[in-house]
Image 1: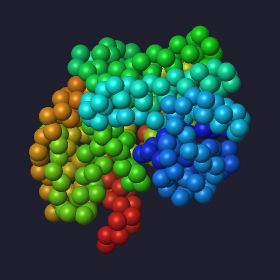
Image 2: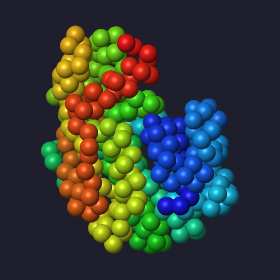
Image 3: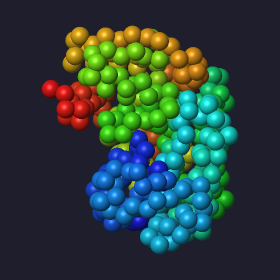
Image 4: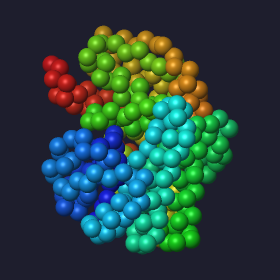
Length: 318
Ligand code: SER
């Protein structure tokens, strides 16, 4: 990767991936883009920033040419729960941004990173230790768009030589930018509320196990995959990657080790619950481990300690 374009740079992943990439590859070589100018100053001031609607292919192509881009990280997405409120909008946003990135990379002979998700699996997928290659019949429009994106990535690689690669991310937990409209968002919100209010009302029920990952591992995974020796890749789009699997009771118990008075309550959101019930409890990420040496660094307790410490500073809570 020499010159990198990040689409959706102000989102949960982008707002941390941009500084991470700038730190590794140089500030000038990472072009942050988002649909409007309302992005943190850190994204605009520390390197190139362009207002870009990822659904506008002509504008994307002009930006790619101007900055001589060879790699696109497409982080534009409508997440699972939000997608169910407006499926055609979710499909349009999730697919048209990707098609633009792939078509442009076909012209430039470039590379594309696309996050897939645990949401690409569905109710008929084996739930425990979900294999890399298995049944994929998701029941959300988000999942349908992720399966389509995986297939398109492999298609553009096989047919046109685009270096398309992707990860099936679990729920990502971070303290910089909140996710929006996902089923796994509770695992971020719980840390804020634990510090601010001492209790949290969870919208998924006890026993809802899902794969999760702390943001530092998610960022490192993306770069390690994109830097991996292509001759070692049997899979491309997309790799199961996981760091931990827990349910609300387990994350609450982890928080209680740091904040003994923390209290967990429940008020179930039926839409989010049915989405969570359709996703794996835990994924088998052995192909990622074998093909490009994937290995997570954070587990539930080390993530909890770091999240609470970082959020105390951010929220100015003693
Ligand atoms: N975090 C996403 C969601 O909950 C899953 O990829 O929608």
